[in-house]
Structure formats: structure tokens, C-alpha cells
Length: 312
Image (cartoon, rainbow, N blue to C red; front, side, top):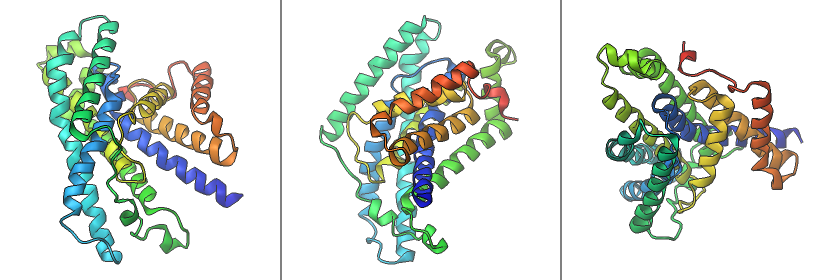
């Protein structure tokens, strides 16, 4: 029983970090631009399809892992491929913001929702045109699991899950460092806190908003890439559930809060896995995070954390 709880907790933490990578981009875009980006789930799916092509090419250049050393090399190549696939989303996100999103910043929210929904449909057709309608798989999951991780501690657990957890921690640390320690990150925070004041002291809100949207697209794509190098296939409808759960995550954590997105994602991940694996209620897997959200909103309507000011 104890071992089962430990395994399902680790599965929840793994799933939570996947959600955090997606929700971090969503909360950054909402926190600074004030846009609820309905196309965010399809940027996540686009990252999953792109990594199929990029990693498929890179994996063909090296031999299949046969021992620890070759498995580590294989893992490094796959992670580099995931980063490269997500990097493609940087210019894609910048182009979407400059072309479609920027003209409607001053419009009512219903225009923003309609526009991002239209982008969602366009991205689905782009993926359908590029990769067809059948699911695709990178086939890297077994190779990544050949990297020894928990085995050295006498505990068997998929190395792929451990890698995702470590990457998720690194993503959170980088985001906190970027927004707290770099000049560009502080400019973004200042723009989020007081847009008029930032404009008055010479900050280009156009460039800041483009950077933020591109970053959001990158992290959505990176989340999709990390999922696609695991046991899951990339398929056209894969962006819907993560998008819905990412909204739950940022509402639980506090709209626009990075720390809140991390805590909310881990709570949603662990609760959803406990509901299935520990409590034996798979029919409530999707409902459990919404119940948690309702309870938290009753106690703290603003979510668990504040907005950008909490990064101190």
C-alpha cells in the first residue's frame, strides 16, 4: 500500500510538472498581456508534432543505446531535440502576436476569445497538413528508460518520469531567475504591474508583449515535446485536456503567478493520480481537479498566490 502511494505520488509530481510547463506559458501571457489564449493547447500539440520530426532526424544520426554511456548520450540528444522543437515556437509565437493578437489588445475580451479560438482551428489544420491525421510517436521512451536513475537507490521507477521532473524543476528555476535577476525579466514584470508607467519611462510594450507571447508559445511547445518523447503519441486532439487543466492550475495558483502555477500544477497532478491509483475512482479523474479548484476558490477567491509581485 505504501509503495503504491509513493509510486502514484511520483506519477502525480511527474504529471504536475508537465502541466506546469504548459501552464507557465499560459499564466505568463495572461499576467502580462491580459489575454486568455485558447490556442495555447494547440501550441502544446504543435511542439509534440515538431519533436517527432526533429528527434526522429537526430536519433537517426546516433546508434541505439546499448549501455549506460550510450543511453546518457541518447538522452542528451533527445532533450536537445525537444529544446530545438520548442525553439521553433519562438518565431511562431512572435509572428502570431504581431500579426493577429496585437491589433485586438484594446478590444473587448470576447474578441480576444474568438481570435484565439480561430488560431486554435488554424493550428489544427496546419498540423493536419504537416503530419496527417494519424498519431505519431518518437519511439524514444524505452531508450530514455535505459538511463539509470532511481535504480542506483534500489528503487525501480521510469527514468523518463524522473527526467521530466528534473527538467520541470529546471524550468521553474530558470523562470524565477529570468524574471527576478535579469533586466529583461524586470522590464516584463514592470510592464505587467503598471503598463502605463512602463510606457512612460520608455519601455516598448510592443516588443515586450511579443517577447512574452513567444516565451509562452515556447513553454507550451516544450511541454508538448517532453510528453511526446515519452510513452504518449502526438495526435490532433491532444491539446484540449492540458489546456482545460492549465486553466484550472492558474486559477488555483492565482492568475499570472509563476509560483502559484507550480503549486497548482503539482496539486492537480497528485490529486488526479491519487483519484485513479490510490482511491480507485478513475471516473472522477477529470472532476477531482475542478473540485479542488472550487474548494480553493471558496477559501481564497484570488487563488493561492498573488501575481507578479510575489517573485521576491
